[in-house]
Image (cartoon, rainbow, N blue to C red; front, side):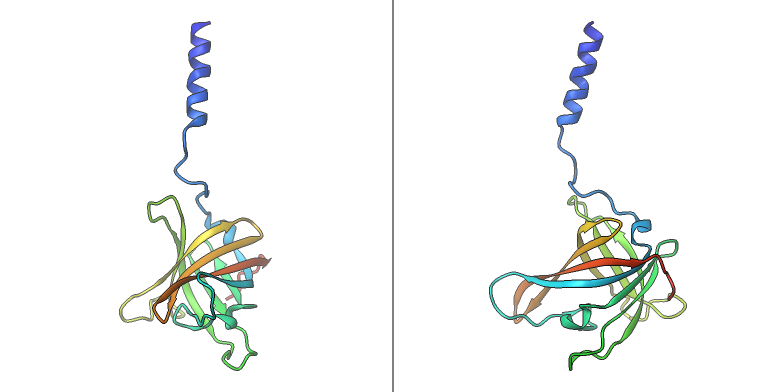
Length: 167
């Protein structure tokens, strides 16, 4: 009887301990396929913001953009929309992965690459965005940016469109 009580007490203590993170480690397989940015919102002080995301295009050009993620080799691409005057529908190939900064969160990171998956930035720079949520049908990423010295976040909501991984 004493052993059963000790076992139950140990199980209770383990179940009550705090976990490192409330976010599960993301799986590359979860991202496999074609995704679309369905919403973009700004989080920060009240005001109007202008955000060029990933040194590529203004934030409105990303709403409706298409992203392809191939998990086995981390390759992918995105295509911004054509429409508003500042958007000209550009493509970018990327090499992506997940990063764990050690604070219990996870980040999506990528670099621009050429057709041979070699980085195209001479300084080998890349980009990171915090993953707020990732499941089989939706991903929410938070991109930290600044405008006129004021920091704010751009929250991008992705919805999975298909399992197609054609670049």
